[in-house]
Length: 267
Image 1 (cartoon, rainbow, N blue to C red):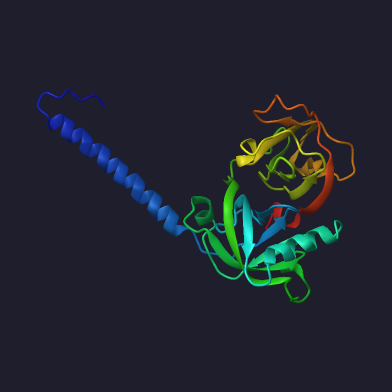
Image 2: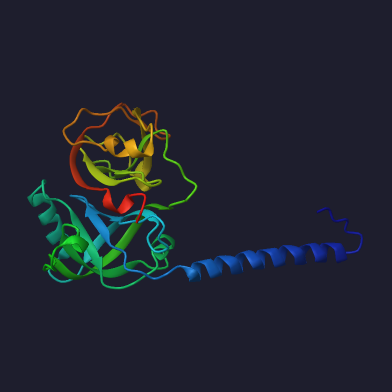
């Protein structure tokens, strides 16, 4: 729209149009945010030095259609942070831990900073799949969000990438890789890296997408066969926007978990 300000009225009308459009956009955003449901968000716990949570997502779910990774701290009675770290380091072959939230909340509020903590119990294994309730290793823990490493909503239009992709996160001395979840059928996996890549804290402020150029995804159904295998041959890797790092491959030390059930075509 071209306005010729011969008398100021054209300018005023133009500003009014802009304000109306802006108001409509803000109102729409507010309605969308208010429309997001409050739910219980189970998450898996990983890390042997720092502590990270990986949201247990679901396709086609208004509550859970997100892949999200957070760095957190545990606070509460009896030092729950130490309880988890001791349990995690005790047995590398039994290292799946989850949190069971004790309150509903909007997941996106963790990403925006509107909510910075929530209460939860800590469990060994996937707490939702136990044959009967077991005592948690720590109860009524305050989970404090330290930083958001990855937060992405699943899109119905997304397709599997041409090559297997993971999200690298952690610190210069402790790094993990989470499989990039895109479209069903897919899988959720987090592994620990044996020899961390040469990355700084600044590089790792957010999770970094890494591509495995020798692991082509010919079809969605073949995707699961590309899960990283602890003890297997180190796959070649390309780190997004970090071509200067000397490592050309990564070696998997251990697997925290591999989840396929929640990411099938049909829920």
